[in-house]
Length: 147
Length: 431
Image 1 (cartoon, each protein chain N blue to C red):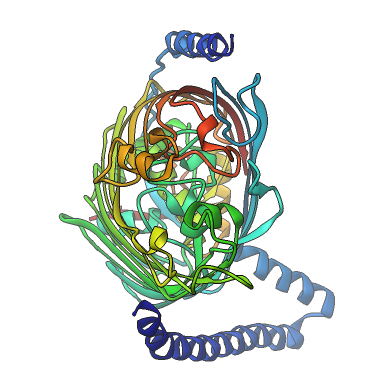
Image 2 (tube, rainbow over the protein chains, first blue to last red):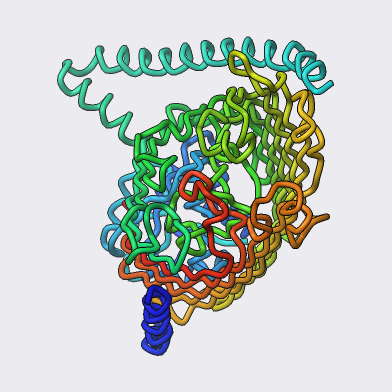
């Protein structure tokens, strides 16, 4: 009687595998790595960028605190950015941030809900870094070149 | 012999560590004080008190992060109890709640603390406890190298999952592979009051290398740990100097992750009044080897542990003869169908004593069932990311053996069942 009980749960579990359908991520337009004008570096290396977004580095070379902004984990620009610029899958980034936060050994980046909010936070936060589609980039935002 | 070595270690390490900790804390507090005072003076010249208070609040909030999680599971077993009375229709006896604050008053300094409430079986009542609380000071930092020190109650760095084992989002399954991440002696492995040195170096081509080394005293003050380690002795366990170290290597894209960790835990047995046992020592020194391979859709993870146990000084042949190696291994595959759905497949193996894998020698010696000395757990699971903040999980285990079953929840080992099934579902929320 009891055995049948857990076995039926197993069947439900097995069935739900079939409902797990696949959905592809759609690509977005051009984007740039952007920063607050107080970040006085014109270009940074990929390794430096990776260290920043892995939240290992805490300050810019001029001593200013680094403030990292990202779009939500399921945002297509976030996917594009992490794969192309960091060579990491979004789930790997989230896992490494979670390890830092829940072991107390680091902080997580700030998640913004949209590109508008990203634009707003980047231009108003000293030391900020993030990524934006080119249509959102104006004179108040500093574009970082990747070496 | 261990206690003599330990008292030497006590004098040689702990005393200076404590004084260094005190001096460092004092320096840091003065530093923060000065930083705050400078801000206040700067503002006094130009602004009134109200806006000054507002800007101080903003200054703090800018540097402070809060995170939390809440998970509730339902567990049903065919036989044997896991986190509550689960073999009679199931139970909602597994709840995890956590809240942490991470404060970075200076670029080089982080203060971190986490409160944790865990309700799971008879030993975890849900009483909130301080999970970690430490300061992390970056002694040296540049683009590629980091070096620093951590002081306080620190999560023990071993394996891939230990430091975040109570956060459902960071686990591959509802129950972590029990052969490595025992839940019954979890407090021993969880965190310890210690000093940790850490170093990280990253190379564009070769990848990242992280080393952590800590020395401190483990948490042994709970009844599940006592019953698991000294089931028939009435006295208490007290912690002694313990050492933990881990080296982690990751390729630049984190496709390959590889770690080696080692622990050297020492526990003293303090006899009760009229105790027939002497003041014994338990040495527990496991070594862990961990490897992981990540692709966009697949993650393969495997960990192996060789665990050395040695008892001495109990003046009791049953305990003093205990000198054996335990062995643990699991292999796990995860598959991501898309951002919403993930599947898990795992085979997890535990032998309490690698020279007695069937448990027959142990059964002949003690009369306890042979199946209490091993466990083979085959798990299938499904994860559903409803939103980035809400997750549901379902999993099914077929288990042969009761090697990792908690004795507090299953007090009579002869009444346990060798072959059993476990189903679990969990809903988890984070912010």
